[in-house]
Structures are given as C-alpha cells and as structure tokens.
Length: 110
Image (cartoon, rainbow, N blue to C red; front, side, top):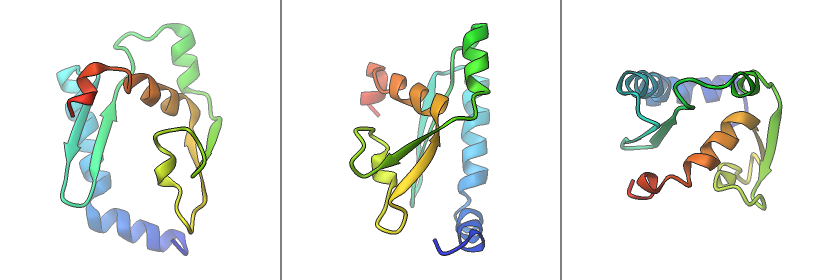
C-alpha cells in the first residue's frame, strides 16, 4: 500500500473490519476458543484467551511490544510479509496466543 488512505479504502470496501468485529462478538457469546469464518476474498480466524486469565496473562495482553516478521520467519504468519511490505509487526501476546492455538487439534479440521 502506498498510504494510509489506500489501506483504509480497502478495509472499508471489503467489510473486513465489520466482519471481524462480528466474528469476535459471536466468539465471545459462544464461549469458544476460536472461530474460522471463510469469506469470498478472505478468511477470518478469531481466537480468545482463557475465560478467566491469570493476573500475569492479563498483564501480558497489555504488553505493547511488537514482534517483527518477514518472509524468512518461522511463524505461520510470515506469509503476511509481501514484496512491498517485506517486514510486518504483530502484537507479541496475540502472536503467542495464535501459535498456541495452532496446537489445538480441532483447528486442524478447519
């Protein structure tokens, strides 16, 4: 993307923000650990931490640190780096929670 306006237009025109919010809301109501929702142009994977996090877990979610990923990263999210955006930053606690979720056998069926 060449700028924020271009990215904002894409986000609004695809409805990814509204659909993402709906998936998270539904996930919270159903009290499921994750939800996979395929759409025509994208797939949303929403996931949740435990229903009652420990104090350390709750503090961890407030951690503003970012993890830098590029194409050579071992993370399954490395595909998000592109030719134009060779490195991406992702919220470290969210990335850790996603990697932990990948160990869930129910997700492999999705």
